[in-house]
Length: 346
Image 1: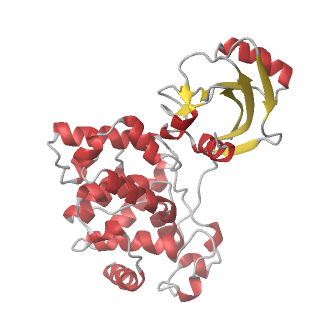
Image 2: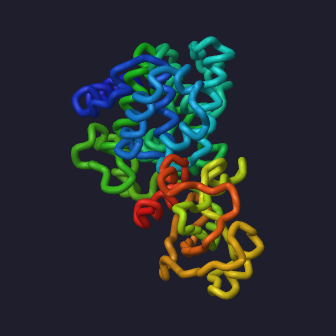
Image 3: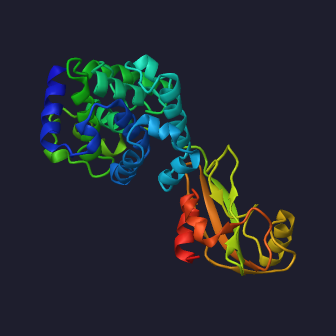
């Protein structure tokens, strides 16, 4: 077990990327990076991390920001519940814990949005608590190296891998060990085209020996993807105003802004859509409607695919609340809306 960690850390020290959160043990910055990198590649998350640290150098600064400010900075990173949990936890740490993060795994896990993995990462990196991390990279490395075909997203799988990762952990050097195994999975034992020929474990890897590298780790099939059809009505008034509505507090894109929405069971024609628009009561009775994109934009989320058309509605009169064209980019919106705004050039 000790040899496993020694080989791993030796590889890491030679090959690790120079990332800003690796040059600190500040729990605020480690927490921020770990939340951002959940379900997000480093290349995508790094610019957001830098923006957040610049805007909010401390947890108190983040706590004092408005939710809209936080969501706007997060815009495009996806999984927006992470941003809302981030903000809630910043407030809790700032106001209830007087700006001091918990210094152990058990108390860290009590924070909103912090699960086993994030608590282990913060506890080991900041406080050298011997808690092994278990993320997608670690699952993949261990499944291949030991030839484990128990599904990683099953209770039995989580138990098997949690026990093994803890056994392999260098308890005297948990911070470097944890960062090393995650880096090794991300860069060397990658999901596709892993570098098996130059792997430090290629003599002992069960998956390589049995030609199972592409088959491991095993994951239970995902739930069926739901199709949804969104028709965004983009009001354009002569006086330079449009309409943005705030989404509900639950569901996808909670508390983000969007144009008036008509969701349908499938593709809808212009005549039927006009009838639905009248029910929204956001436009004057007289308006001209035209399709902006004939081909639907398919926006893929984890469990649903959203087929979207934007429709331009020109009118003389808008109902409240109105948004000036010059102010539209200040609002936090889903990336689907942001892309349209950039392309349309209000």
